[in-house]
Image (tube, rainbow, N blue to C red):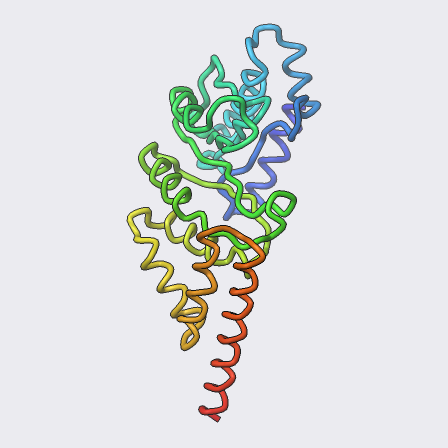
Length: 246
C-alpha cells in the first residue's frame, strides 16, 4: 500500500508542477482508512494510531525527497479526531501537520503547541460556513476571527485550509476579511470592511454597511426584516444612479 501511495503521489507532483503539497491522511471517522489501520495492526512498535498515520506520511515524504523531481514537495496530514493525539515520533521536515479546530478531544490551541514539538511545519484545518450548522445564515464573527488569526501568526502557522460553503450573500464579507487577514494579519478589520463596501457596492455602500452590520447582534427574524429593507433601498438607489447616468 505504501509503495502505491509513493507512486501515485509522485505522479501527481510530476504531472502538476504547480502543486507543492499533497494531503495524505486517514479519512473522517473513528476508524481511519484501510491503509493506515493495516500499518497500525501489522507494526506493534507504534504506541498510538497517530504514530502509524504519521509513519505512513513520513514514508511518502522520504520517497519524495529521494526523487529529484519531487524533492522540494511536501506531504500534509490532518491532526483530526483519531489522529489528533500528538505522536511519539517526529515528522519529516517535508511533512506539514494541519491541526483541526473542531472534532478533537483536546483544545486545538493546545494541539498546535504539542504538535509543534513534533513537526517543523504546522498548519490549520478550520471551518467557516458549514451548511448543516449555519444553514447559510449571515454572520459577523470578526472578533473570534481576529483572535484566531493573531494566535496563528504568533504560533508560526504556515498555511490554513478552510471548509466552507458558497453562500456569498451571507458569508462573502467574512471570506473577504479572512483572506485579507491571512495575507496580512496586521490589517485593521474596519479598514477591510470599508474597502469591501466601496469596491463591491460603490454608491450603495452606506446601505450595505447597515445590511452587514446587523449580523453583529446575531440572526433573528427582526434583523432579517431590517436587512431586507436595506437591500431594497440599496437596489432602489442603484437603479436611480443607472437612470441618471443614462
